[in-house]
Image (cartoon, rainbow, N blue to C red; front, top):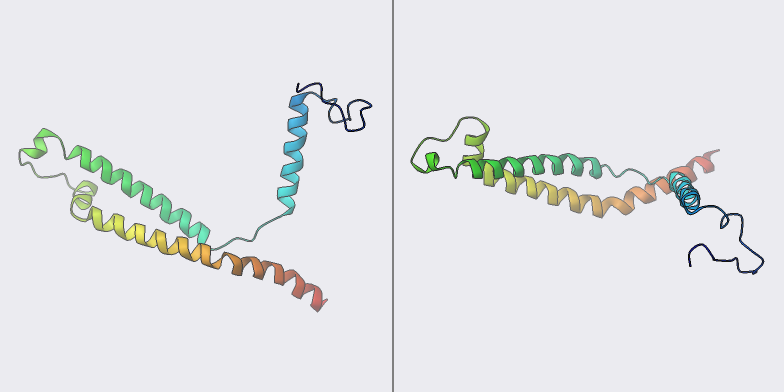
Length: 134
């Protein structure tokens, strides 16, 4: 059972085991958070670029989907001209725009993966160089 575990010595519960489950979980999460804060990973400059391009791609894909559904209305099938603005632009250039954004996203993804080791080595080498200079 969960609440009946004993320490390895068999003499009773340890200090942590005597606490309620919620408090033990909180304690473990706080220890994990402290550990993660100590191990700060350097920022790969391609990650923010990936974020921006990914958000733009998601917005464009959603707009293209909405445009496609809107153009399926019976009035559009009868020959009425499409609306102006974003819908007309996506109607004419939507596929090209989506494929271009997908290409940029792929290039930035490969660049981020390919240079990740470089940024890690650079971050490790910087403190070593500062220590050597001092």
